[in-house]
Length: 89
Image (cartoon, rainbow, N blue to C red; front, side, top):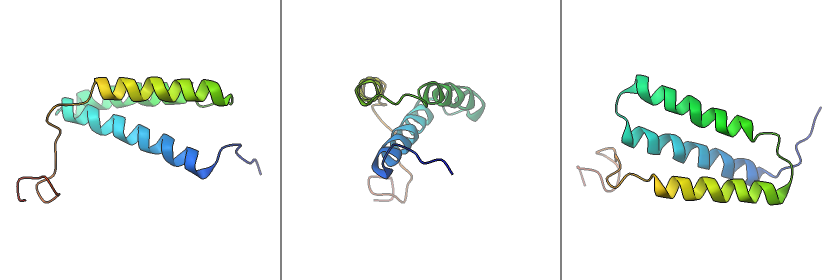
């Protein structure tokens, strides 16, 4: 059984970053067929960096991804109506 050199906090951060990137793309693209193509590109980027073990390189990758996400953030993101900030509140 192989063990991973990364902590559970690292895995949670990567999953959170991936999910935030997908949700942000969904804010920009309403059509699911177009969004799916973009989601596959995001997944390919994560897979390309999957085997990086160097903590410094990972920190640079994460910093670049966070900056990219902040730059592409939608000015009026979709909020479900029943959630805080939605139209029913």
